[in-house]
Amino acid sequence: MHAASLLSLSTAVPAHAYQQNDILAAAWEHFGPRFPEFEKLATIFANTGITKRHSVKPFYWYLERQGWPERTAAFLEGAEALFADAAEKALNAAELKPENIDTIVTVCSTGIATPSLEARVAHRLGFRSDVVRVPVFGLGCAGGVSGLSIASRLAQARPGSNVLLVTLELCSLALRLDQLTKANIVAIALFGDGAAAAVLRAGDGGKTWIEESGEHLWPDTLGIMGWNVDPEGFGVIFRRTIPNFVTAHLRDAVTAILARMGLEPADIGRFICHPGGTKVVQALESALNLNQGALDHERAVLADYGNMSAPTALFVLERVLKAGLPSRSLITALGPGFTASCVALRHAA
Image (cartoon, rainbow, N blue to C red; front, side):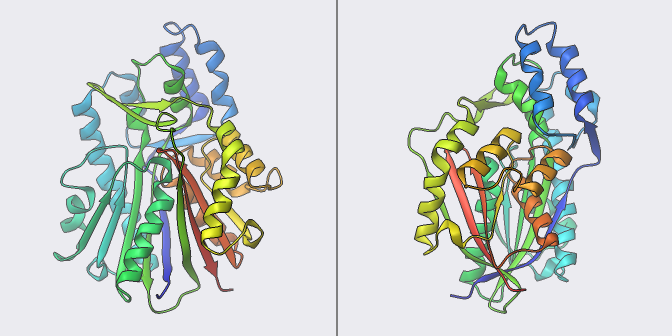
């Protein structure tokens, strides 16, 4: 089959930007008096490697108690705007118009929208009435990589058609003032909002194309990462030390995925990874037998944007593309399930 080429890749963030130190100061004010463990947990903010993050709402919004209606309204408003921003950038970079898009894949796990986001912006952006819509929910941090895999397969199925992938997450809307838990403090220290969009097409060449993709789902790991749902909204689940899990298990999973592609780790010129946090990046370097510091673009994205969940790996890919891809690279991300998702890229100089 014709491989799907990556015609463009663009990223977008909301207008509100916050320094990590300011977020920590607000967390001290609101959690310090109520949560005896906060003094010990506050060190997480300094250890994340994050300098600033972006969000769809002004700072004061997060300091007020919000329920499902308020969070959903904020999600719909913010997600539609961010979807349009990222999609328009990707279309312009591919020198295409909205009416040229045949299929839209939308990946998001931080809010509920029915009708889905691409339907809500379709008239505004100018998509055709017969565009194929593929909304995907529940992939979490693996969503950007899995979304790229899904979009590439849809492009392969209809050579010559244009597939738009938009992955966006508004993680900040799940931050909670009412949950006095370590998981919630970790989320407050890590998460930001962002979006990435890409256009793919199969059948007419291209310098960068998706060679193959694969996933690995570990048994008995549903509790590692995900959402709890209660009357106020989503509540984050972190029930195991993810860096330790990465160090212990990722290498074998990636090796098995590559073997199914007919490859081995030595064939990969650059691993492009979702940077969940500084300790996760260090664990990735250890698990993949990379030199400490090798994942430099991952650390830079984490510093500038925090963990945006699904789009984050594509933010890293954007930087690696600008710096220059090797002939073969592998994009990896971990998400709820607990799942490793991988996409192998080929690049012609």
